Image (tube, rainbow, N blue to C red; front, top):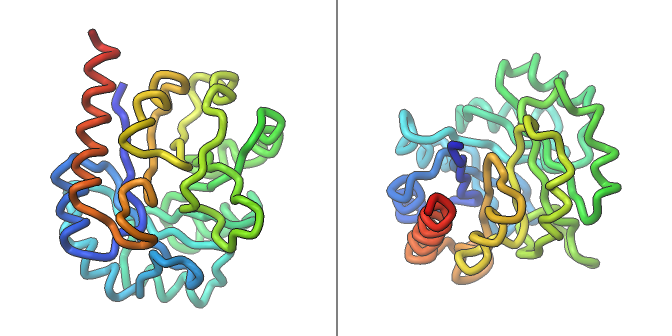
Length: 219
């Protein structure tokens, strides 16, 4: 099975180069002002040029209004939108129609019962992402460096297309792949030397860990 890998929260040429060199299938840009990974749409548009023909560029938003989304789409020209807020299935469908872009909807989970919210998005969102619930007091819906119990993903339908996010790093990605066998993984804070500061060496280390884990499973 092909494993999609998304490096999210990119802001520099060096981090983008490391993500692409490692084989990222998706590169993400954060458009949420409270995040240390926030980037202006025009700057993301410049950076994403390096990914053309190599990886899909994803615009990550949190309950953004149409005016801001218009600015993001015009300035960055994303391949996909990622909705990380409280967007309803109706909002997902509306934005797909408005921009003609695929949409990935993020759902925060902590226990199997949280998947009860999943059904209305199936067939509406093009892809799903499961992230850990933010810790108490956090102002960020994602990028908090916390994980959930990946074993609960075993109860999902085998054909469900999703990405696993939350607390991944080079030390634990092998466990995540073994326990959940997800179609895709997403990492942000796990390859940073400080909040919002991507470390090319940590990105390279993460890709090495992914390859090692997959080689072990194949063996």
